Image (cartoon, rainbow, N blue to C red; front, side):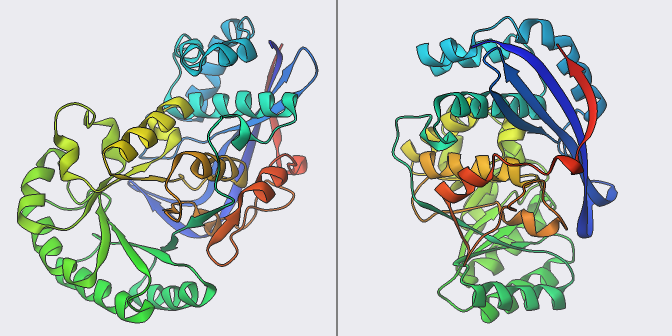
Length: 367
């Protein structure tokens, strides 16, 4: 199956609330939707949306990479390479030399194209059995008073896992907020924390020692220098997860992984669906919890991540896909949405095929 058309569309989705990213305040999410069309006139959609402060590439660089890679992209028989082996497919992608968000978006379009061509949903592209539903962790952000209102609402809505951002205020105040959230949601709901690499080692240890008393599932990215995780683990003894540092540290070499309890995997950051699957399977082998997470993407990418989670993560583990609530609108005709903290995998797979084309602006076309 070869490609004879690549259409690039731009989108801009306003946030419900301003979102701080690196040194910027974002009021909207911008990205590309790409559509690839095969010689058999079947199509597949993908999403390329580098996030400020997280990805090195921007949209202009992404577009240039698509333009440069197009001659090689249309020469490869993608269905044949995937049928032979997933590694052959991955090899073809590496020949294009794309940045992580670009490779993920293009892979997603190719997988959706193959699914459309075979009449199968994305989650049935692999032989592994899939979960019927996928849990999401409810995400708390904002001022402390608003966070407690959100926490109460999420608990009442049926979420069984809640994630709280910490590291944006003095350690003692963060610990007090964790205590208040735990009191609000009760003891039966899992509580995850994410510091986004906020702390030096001493502050992280102080926080970790205090917060462990509140039954924390894991603390994500506590350190400015993730190579100090072993020292932190010895001093604080709180479960630890890594997210963006997965691109900085070779956790699959040596015994570094023994300091960890979970991997938070963003496919558009680790760079490919194949790498995502590899990390999920490796994590399970090492008794770590794999959690798929998004970068405030539209429902198109979120639907794909939920489907991947249904196949390659652990049953009942909550995924980091609740970010859809921060967007005022979705690109899907039937928006990506959770019900009681869960999504129905088959339902979201069927809904992910229909886009609101009126929200997309044509950007480029390659034939």
